[in-house]
Image 1: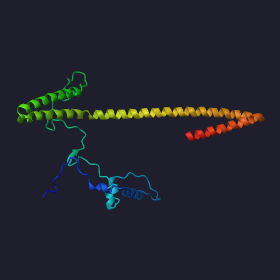
Image 2: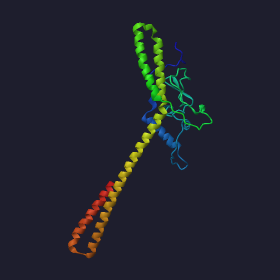
Image 3: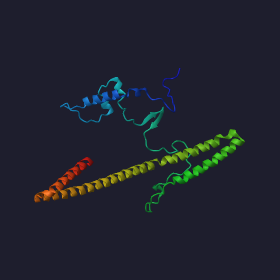
Image 4: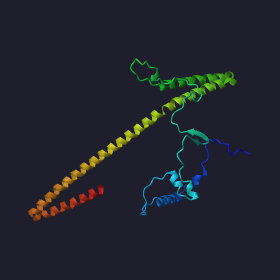
Length: 256
């Protein structure tokens, strides 16, 4: 009989059965319960950000308890049966017991105190990635030669290639914070460009509306002067201009 406490590691674990409770009816019921619980003394609901602990304190029905999000994990959490840590610090290869094939980035601790402080030169990741890539190609050719002569001696060469791959992967992971910053900068620049373009369009619409308003104002003054002169021959054209002005105002209201 299998041990019930034994953890099963699978590449694609099935989803937990609680997903069946995430229906539209259950979500609407949970929303109604939160609305009722957030009412003040006057019976009016107020906006409230519910924490998982507060939701669990509402004594929810069994079918709604799975809709309450769990607490934020601290320390470690399990994904597909493997423990993951919440630490954002990338562990070094030495801490993992793996041989590091590139030097550590220099620090300021080795500088002469009598000399002015100087910023250390950053580690050239691209240079060492290129060297590792060339070493991988060379080791692959050596592995092919070993397999053609004495296949039973393949293990040391495969271990060397594994170490090279791990070092290359670790160097790439060192770029992740830089990649995140550059991606955020790019997103903010795109958002700024979109905002500037929207402001330009708004300024253009404003200038067009102001031009139309000036034309309407000029036509209105012409109509008033014609009405004051009481010239019967010009009353028809004045009324037509007034009708045109009204149509222009209707168009402006639809645009706005």
